[in-house]
Amino acid sequence: MINEALGRRAGGAERTPRRMVWLLAAAYGLTIANLYYCQPLLLQMAHSYAADSAVGYLPTAGQLGYALALPLVVPLGDIVRRRPLVCLLLLVDAAALAATAAAPTAGALLAAGAVIGLASASVVNILVPYAATAAAGHERGRVVATMLGGGLVGILLSRAVAGLTAAYFGWRVLYLASAAMTLLLAAVLARAMAPSAAEVPIGYGAQLRATARLAAREPLLRGRSLIGACVFGAFGVFWTTVAFLLADPPYRYGEAEIGLFTLVGAAGALAARVAGRAADRGRQSAWTGGLLILGVASFGAVALGDRSLAWLVAGLLVMDVAVHGTHLLNMSVVYGLVDGARSRIASVYMTFYTLGGVAGSAAGAGAYRSGGWTAVSATGAAFMAAGLAAWAREQHRAAKEPRPGRGHEGRAFGETR
Image 1 (cartoon, one colour):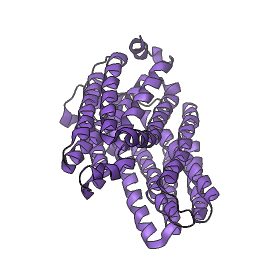
Image 2: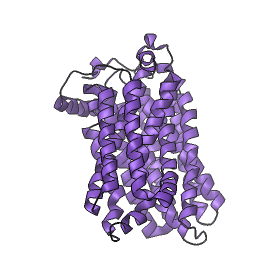
Image 3: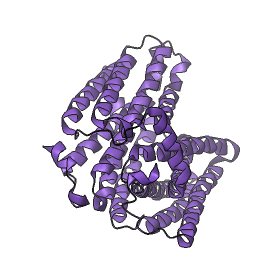
């Protein structure tokens, strides 16, 4: 059986079953898509509630739930059995999706959206540490890259699926279908995930304190989390404002054209795969620096995008490779810090990462209002440059205080308590 094979690692030399990796990646994509279905449907959904403007806050409600899940729910992945936890969270997610479909008021819709964000974020950020723990050290980069690729495909396809389904059947049917799919996913994972005891036999409060101590005591975790926050901040700067650029002269694109433009982001999936191979060869540091330099340069091309679509697409492709490749390399590094309790690491890293995206979105919107597309490009480059500076500081610290044996497999968990 898949779950039995996944439980055997033979001293770290055995490969993780490919079927299980792809199943987890598909689960990641299907679950994260639940957060993004609403984005192209807000106008249609508002009409169902007498054009209530509160519906426009549905993505914000989902992101709020996502942000709460990272420090409060994700650490549970270390102290309870992961298989029942993931299945329970998927059941909560399915219930919230069904409640969204049946929501009688905009207020009920927002409440259900927040629960979808919390449950979906918890599932995906527990599945990634689960896959990283099950993978042998020599293949962890590949496994995590496959997971992240599944998530990116889920995000990209969610908008197209939502638009087509809602156009023919209405948005409520879309959410009912998603609830049914999530229930099916819970049943599949209940059979496929390896049964295992909790990694850490401590209580919830002790786990939260241990997570805070881990962040305080691991400079490499803090440094990589800061790099992640910076690159996702640059990503937020771009995607918060590019729709305004494309809707204005000289482009004057409509919603359909702008939606198709987002498919260019598929380059990130390829970047994650290539970066995953580099991570498995122990080249995380050099590749991170190179990708960050590319990220800074990409906004030079982006700056020319207000007059040339070719430059805009070229800049986006390079930026997307830099963001997703760096994110994968960061995760490869931080998940190798310890041999257990990786949900703590996920909680710390993804909290920083998400806050960086929020900061980038806010900075991008302010830059566009004050200085147009030139200011947006400069702001994105500044976020990338900050990530590059954090990487340079990491290299300086590593040169002064070499720490043998920590680059790939990390320490045993007991050393971090």
